[in-house]
Image (cartoon, rainbow, N blue to C red; front, side, top):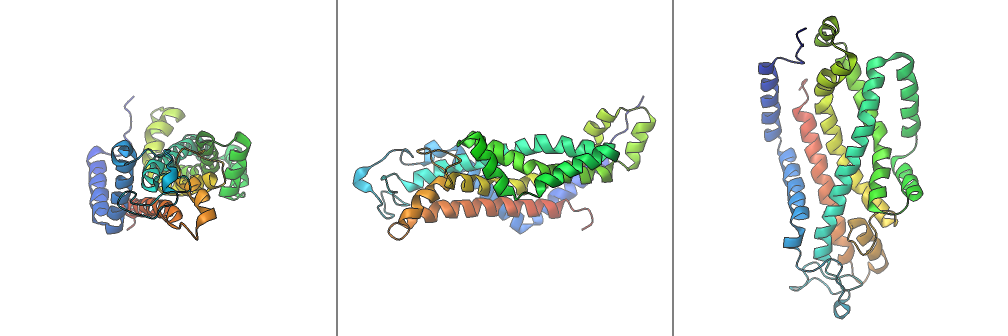
Length: 289
């Protein structure tokens, strides 16, 4: 039997070229991409950029304001804030990417099967998804992180499980749209199995929407990781994390505001970058526009 292609190659190439042109012309998206790329490079090259060890205390330089020796000042233990912000990018980006990957692996197959099979399977699956979505995202993440125990790994698992219902709902909705297309019916007609159709046709065609959702979800996951670290449920001291840095700075805002300004600004810029990037991808992939 001849396999039915999800879309003719020339047409798919034209669509990709059009999406790329629209994305490159989207100025806010390019700004977001530049911000995200900058933070990724900072996280990767942290040992080369950071002037001090992020956990090295200096009791002679406690809560020193920004200076030539310490660009972002020092914290309550005399640690260089600039170095800790740089190394903190690793924890935040890793938490954002890995937790979204966990949500993707759990939620997408669940939603695809529910949307493709339909009937009672879809009804039960949607009730489960609705039950999870009825719980505020951050509350569910905090409860799971507290149950699993305080650590960055457990925080990523908690955020991933809390985000999975969103991916399941998106995957289900897109699958229901794709499964009635003519090429899906043609695949059925030539005897292609359901598993092959889901993997080769449905998943490929819903991937753009999932990529957009993943980009936006990373921003939410970074905020969630910072919140968990602020509550002591994420990255554990003395390892640097933007959330734990804000927690430590909360007791000395009046005398050392720089200890909160820089990690807070890092969170703001990273989340802004991913949101701009996600919005740009969404606009570029909008076939109706």
